[in-house]
Image (tube, rainbow, N blue to C red; front, top):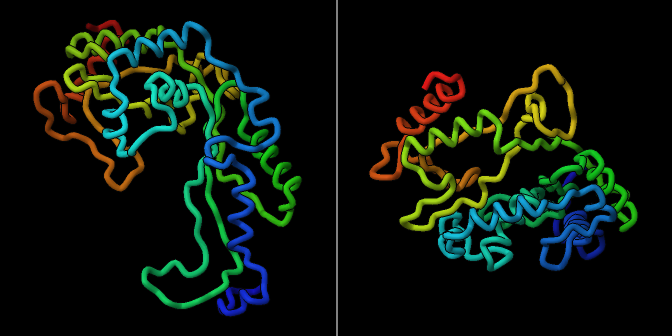
Length: 272
């Protein structure tokens, strides 16, 4: 109850570490891809027919093996590029970012029974879902599964925000891409490269977006959210995350990226 104890005591003492693992496994399906939390999808809005048609156009020249290789994975959950992009754009996730506790020293032989295990998670959700509501449902599911002793802490939550692909900012970005000779915002025709992760991130656009948002905080600050840029990067948040600096041929570097953003701003301001 005060600290870790010697590992030999596992013969007669329960393990918080094994209990944590069993607890986590009770919240997801056998393959880890489906949250087993009651009411998880009850507020979820499915994509429209127009949105699905747009996805089909986006992946019309996409190769699933190239997608996987560019991301650095052997395969996706699905084998059809359309299904992969649909999942990224319109499905939810309950991810395990990491887990730690006990003896984590590389090559160390010390045997202990840790008294505390911590896991960190991130949830990606879509309109009209609510992060705090999902957290409460996870809490209720843990209690139902017999894990009332597990403590939960919310690090942060950002309500959802949906941009209008046809607003003035996105139109300015589209004109910039035309000027820079980019025919497909997310693909390079010569090698069918595609970034399935370019589908929204964790930032507070709901505070500024004049489109649909999960929580309207300051209605008078609304502005069009969107845009585009040239330049190549990938594997975000990974140890081998990269950004092309120089660029060559149809691959723009940092200077090209900066110029593309300046061009878009000029387009939006009506100065081009």
